[in-house]
Length: 465
Image 1: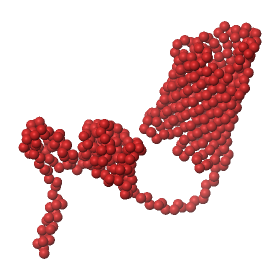
Image 2: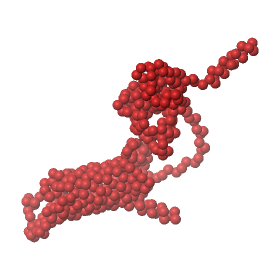
Image 3: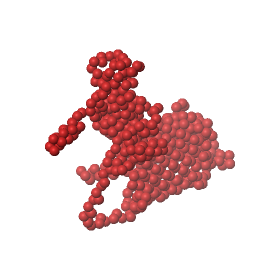
Image 4: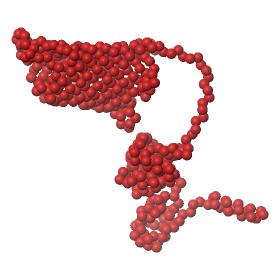
């Protein structure tokens, strides 16, 4: 009995401790090390060359020669990003089907791949992949990222599939498009113990006064000629109430905005004016940080003009209805951190104009008032950020119905990370205006200051000191 037991024990130990042995391959006519390596996907041609020390020159293969095929390594290291790319031209679907994934996972992953249900992810040194596909559909197992620079970071897209207690990630790195995958066990969270009862906190009241305030200024110069325009203004909002709702926090208050402008056309016509409006303001703040504001306000506008020789003068007063909408959102994309969008309309409710030439009044029928209805839409896209600053690109388009002018502004902006201050460089084109000297190109610089946030920060700092 002991004899049979000893034989069985020796057999078991043999199979447990015996390493995976290398095998041999008989070279065929036309073979190369690369072609042979394709027949053994887990081994590279360099590893075959290294295992055959007597093969000094890899080109000196002859039919009938026997070479050693080493066993695949337990772990492989992805040392060169883009060194042996899978490329975008090869079939991702075929690649996924070749992986040793459960068939159900393959099916679901291919479905998500075809409907582009992507999510972005980062690749760093030390990350592990269970399988990765290189070159001509060659698969490596147990791949660890080991790029030359420790701080190097890569990016890619992936689809995720949940199956039998695991989350499978099928990934597509941007650097070389080497399809890869790994899985993670889904840990079931134990329900937390019931919290210790605490006395309820007093609810915040409905009336919660607060304020916001902004100021801004800009100047534009024509790219040819002497035309210029200057703009300045400010906004103040007194928030009065705050209430919680299922869609977010709703604030309401009263606000007022002032705008002023002055300038000169290419023909020397001088103009200046101002506009103000006052009324209710609403703001909705959602749980994801998105802010949407709406202002509906009444106000007045004044426009003054004078000819270059000083003989012609005009004055128009306009009653306006202002409707403004702003929307700040934070999209989860690789290149855009924040989008600030706005839409403003000033409706001309009523107007009257008086004008004169050399001191003599002009009949309104010969010099009629102009419709001051105008619309503006714009957005800022925050695309980069550093330790102290961030910035991006801004865009704005506007149309004045009376002068029939359409303007388009575009240019970069920069701000501090707290967005207390924003500086802009803009290029503007105006076309379609019925006054020829109003059309053309110009460039300008602008700046805005969040005065309310600045004052609150200074006040808090003074109190803490």
